[in-house]
Amino acid sequence: MWKRLTLAGVALALPGASAGEDACRLLAGGVLRTFVLDRPDLSVEAVRLQPSGTVMLPRHGSIPPGGMTPDEARDALQVRLRRDEGLSRPDVLVAIAE
Image 1 (cartoon, rainbow, N blue to C red):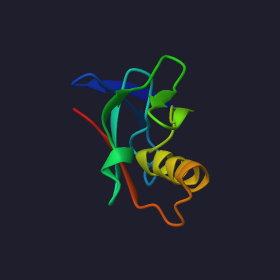
Image 2: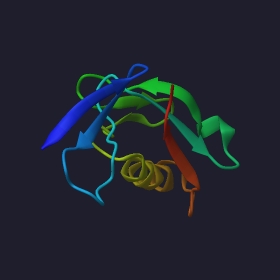
Image 3: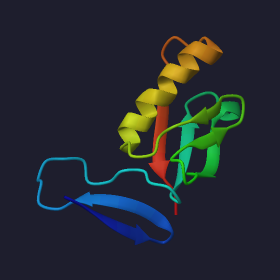
Image 4: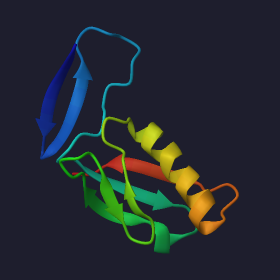
């Protein structure tokens, strides 16, 4: 069972009693930041998740990180950067903003 918690405008989902699972998931209304090492042109300071759970990133369009952990969203963005930018090993950080 998941409980919804909102802190400083960032929506998180916390597992009820499941220890060892990732504690936060990106939900609609949350704000995330993406950093691509050595490529500031691909980094985004803050982007809000839409009600559909997607975010619009310049140059890459819509990606669906809703329900993902920050690490899962990072992996999805790395796949997109390899495909769209031709980066062989993009070093990406996805963080919850605010």
